[in-house]
Image (tube, rainbow over all chains, first blue to last red):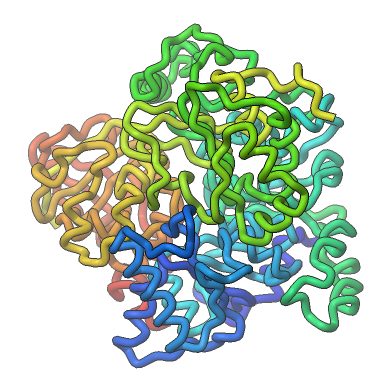
Length: 470
Length: 160
């Protein structure tokens, strides 16, 4: 029988399948300092062990400072969480990439970077952006702390089988340096909505996806959760196998595995999806979010919508847009390029990989950040930072007036000192523009790295298609 | 289960407003509860009473997988959230940890229920009685597995 890629991975991981539930085996469990402490407390309380410490990997990313790491952590509550993770990993025998490790970084950046993420595997992590790993053909779910405890104890997760959702993206982007993977996924969410993928695993397909680099595919899969999906998937190909070759944790029998993946890890022709959506990439423009959820997004050439028009007669949508514009302090009809910004954040598990920084640096090279803007680059991992520094990217950013930071989640979710002040407006390469996400009262516009870089230089949004980015 | 309603006529109430990021460092659940809904309603912790229900629109609990969101609501006294629909990770967290009941209601119930109404929820009959308005609404039944986990008192108590 023809099967989708999702069904193949799902079926090959079933431990028990009865009574409307499936118990799935978990191949890799990634943990971090924020959603794991209560899970370890639970294990201790019930005198349980971690079943497979060898399949569990930890790092600290959510609350770590991105400033000088030779200094002590000033925030006591952060320090307590960080020490708790150190203690827990030691007690339960789990590999930890701590704040001083050359492998520290955002959990969804280091997983692939270290070869922990592999095609055809199941991965879970107590973080919703675990969907990122789907770029490698890995079935990856974000989970809460109760499930983290369950996986630590059993190496299994109980789930009801999600539905399948095919999203096909076809055609050539007119200017792939200006119209990025971020713009593709934001266009998709804008069209299918924040609940468009609820209860489904999305498989992204089509020639546009095949052309993307692995880093760009991660940007696409990363934001699957912003459409409500349980996971995002892209079938592995030669780019995938090349990317993972020779990484720190890539298995010794890698070539053998690749041969098997080549044969099996794809959706069979004739396999049926529960749902399908097609998008042409040809006319996608750089995207800018204007509201307080990622679907409230428009082309950079657009204007702030009138709530009545945006809602198309749906009173709840009209109300939502009205409230969003109040929070964002934006007037309907304002051209997006006229929006003046105070802050720029280039970072997060969506857009802080080497390719993102290379592209952004092209916009910045030889220019200066607007005197009215404070801009920062927070590389996704220590390895990204090191590689970028070897290419001289740090110098390009610093010469232009950007702050060049240590790796972590940083201003994406405002758990460390990198936050917006109330009323500040930020062009951000992160994934969520929710109210208060980057700091209480802060206003977030989601954009690609090149759009954020151009906004930093100009002090307002610009259409990066007008720049020479080649 | 009886309680009174705190209603938010909003879709997409995300976990960042239910429990803002800076408070994810708090481990004391009672302390966490003081910040429940703070991103949307600074007075929530003063208004909420033990046994209350929240009523909201579509896609409640979207965004982050932080279990701190249902925990904060639960420890502030909220027994159930009645919404048009839920984001899946929030739904799962609420049930797995037995923090609160995520109950799906239909448009007519959503529009009919007012802030402050007194409600009685009977999950054995999939029925919600509005004691203030003297009306009865249907709730969407829990899927079989979810119902069993709820009955057991959470994922760790559930034995197939």
